[in-house]
Amino acid sequence: MDFFEVINKRRSIRKFKPTPVARENIIKILDAANWAPSALNLQPWEFLVVTGDKKNLLGNNYGKIVDNYTKDWDEAPDKAFMPRREFMQFAQIYGGAPVIIIVLVAAHADPVYQKALLESASAAMENMLLAATALGLGGCWMTGPLEGETYLRDVLEISSDREIVAITPIGYPEVIPNPRPRLDPALTQKVRWLS
Image 1 (cartoon, rainbow, N blue to C red):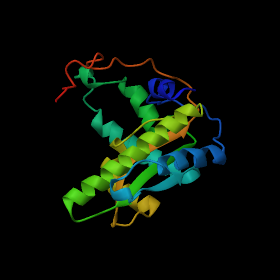
Image 2: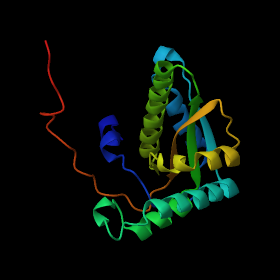
Image 3: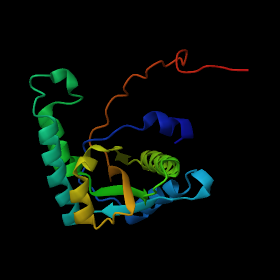
């Protein structure tokens, strides 16, 4: 797949086939993440690859978060990017993905330095999602589960000197959503040319 085709085909996948993902493909995805640009070339990211019982524990907890978050969606359906019941099903099993990857960085007291670490890890996360797409896999950049950060730290044994940046399920897409329209697709409002 051509690079720009990969970018245009990447979607937030929320429903996965139960097909296992080969370890070699997970390594390829993580290698792509590891080649991301980073501030001062610190390459500060770390990755947790979660499967099996631990993955199920994460789903149970995220299901509770989503249940609370969406409790009034029946009264305010305009908030819903997907029906509440579908969102709940996704959360409880991370869409049925066989693998979940969590991106971490070191926690730093200096907010400027911390911002650089988070931005670097975000570049790694994007590389990961593009690599998954190129391999016929899918993911979904998620921060919602971080509402249960204390639980995540306990179950995954993440020390307080690490910050959790984002989470993505990884698997073969069962449903690939249509592309969502780009805001300002002609880039007439988001871009200013200066000279």
